[in-house]
Length: 180
Length: 210
Image 1: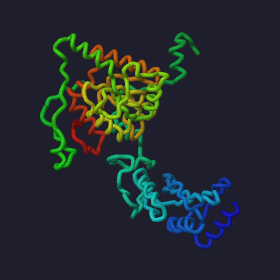
Image 2 (image 1 turned 135 degrees about the vertical axis):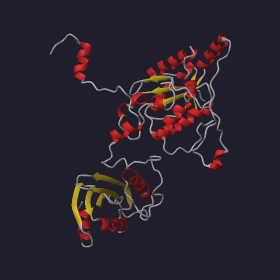
Image 3 (image 1 turned 60 degrees about the vertical axis):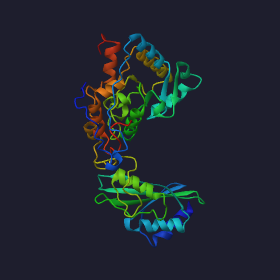
Image 4 (image 1 turned 45 degrees about the vertical axis):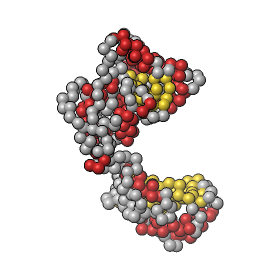
């Protein structure tokens, strides 16, 4: 999309935009610093026509030591989506809230607070339970969370659970006298 | 694993605030005593088996298999089995597959609100040992630790034919007087309650939901 190249060129004057990637004609990604992200998103919403927030999600890059937030914005007139990637540190995981731009972002931010422990100061009802009730461990979608260990400790694993090698097991059942 | 209940005082209801505590009953559930005449009990069991009302509460993905069970092809109504909208009118609780911790709280509440005689049928492999969700942080592994189960119908998913067979099996068990899950719940009430509270961290309901 030619307009997208002009858009990036235009915004590069005021923001440091990196890793621009046009995945397909209707979808592109770019990366921006944590301090500039909300300003850029507001500009995209107010002046460039990206008025729809499709979703807000997080990826835990534990090896690289940061979270990547993705703000997916959509322009109805141009039928074009932009994913804005923002890297934030894991400890303390904190990001500026965008609930003033889109009220529904508060719900996404509640979910990210619960599942990843990312805080968005000022976001409404941030500390209310979203899916989990009475969760008292580290947030479950963080990669250092060991779900097998948690499940075995919490849900007292049923004794006698075993795995069989399917080939050997079925051979024993169907052809017990057969030798390989 | 039978633990006979030793301490039979009133329930503490510690999950409730002091103002709320007066609004709820703190009585323990009571055992069902069969009729003294065996022939009467057998007749009553036959009646019960032919009028099973299921709680329409789909607790997991298995609930999708309950819908074709009701419609004309499989038609479970001909067995005297029909869904009801509220636990107060129901006598059968179908656990529809996996149960998350959040759902377990509602399952316990609904189960306790059901009037006796009541029976629990667990569908699928997940209520037995967790199934494909055995390592999930949010899905319980064995429902029998939290509420008593009268009948398991295994499979992932169990087809409606299997559910029909399960309903017939449940009727057989009731007629023989072997579907005594509610009594097991009363006898081992403290053990079940301790298991439930070990999982459900925000316990904000009475200890027994009359």
